[in-house]
Amino acid sequence: MKTLTVALPGQAYDIIIGQRVLAQVGERVKKALPNAQRLLVVTDDNVLPLYYSQVEHSLRQAGFQVGVHTVPAGESSKCVQQLNRLWERMMEFGLTRTDGVVALGGGVVGDLAGFAASTILRGVDLVQIPTTLLSQVDSSVGGKTAINLRAGKNLAGTFYQPKLVLMDWEVLTTLSEATFADGMAEVIKYGCIRDQEFFNFLCAHPSRGEIMGDIESVLYTCCNIKQQVVAADERDTGIRMVLNFGHTLGHAFEKAGHYTIWTHGQAVAAGMVAAMELGFALKVTPRDGSLERLIALLEGFRLPTFIDCDRETMVGAVGLDKKGAGEDISVILLRRMGEALPYKMKKETVLQVLETACRR
Ligand code: GLY
Image (cartoon, rainbow, N blue to C red; front, top):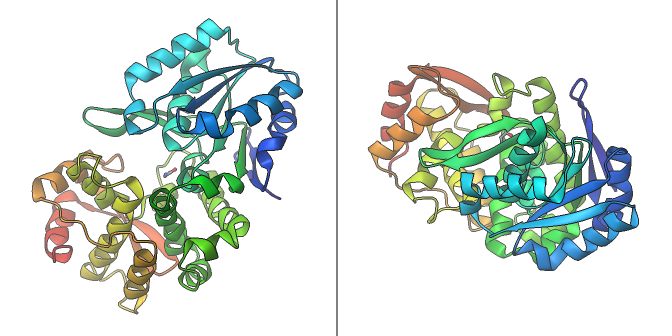
């Protein structure tokens, strides 16, 4: 069992990483939310039959009154209609400002429940229990909450830190190969942006079995990088942008596939390759063989390394990217493997270079 603290001034919280953490949910939540009496668990219809009864039992044993709200599994639940249903359910359940919300599920559940918790009664406490690799290494940590709008993903949201994040790595065993690989794209991203040694480790362990053999330290390394970056820049105005390595193009790829052809991790995988090619073209990233190693690693997890995308989609994605400001955009490039930095440049320059650098 490992514990990490996200060292945000005035809102520090722990991330607990280990095996059979689900059995300890009650006692852990009691410590983090000592005044809460009622807890509304938000989950989806895939996770509900797998893990809800264990979580409910543990929370009841610790003395909480527990309710549950289930949304359909999938990205389409991150919408204003589901948000509205959840707000109404929170009131019907009788949540007060000293009570709490427990997000039990992947990124969709975490983002939706987090948004609702941050806004209902002007904010009730939130506990994240992420059940996918992607949500364990990324969305459950750092306080971003969101729903999607017709104009794009995550366009309405808040920064709202949880009071506790509980990660039980045993839950990863029920993920499909594709969902596990989806999370691996973000795991690999951490090596690229901050930790060459970790990248080397991943290259030497390019399979699910090998990663699961060391999963506790893989989760710890990723969450440690994320908490350091978030603690330095909670509001995403500077260094936190490096977490979006591969995401500017990734978002374009997701959008080009109408959010159904490519998953987030698949889009980020191809986006990281494109970002390295952009870095070569802009003479920021050295050609030292790292791209070839990245491609081999992604292929080991059956992640795509190239996705075709028309100019119109790219224009839309670069223009809409939340890192954009006016004519400029910050793109995340690698100065070398293990070191990413945001580079501010004209959107038009990025588009021109992308068009030539990232087409095959
Ligand atoms: N997923 C990127 C971030 O939390 O900033």
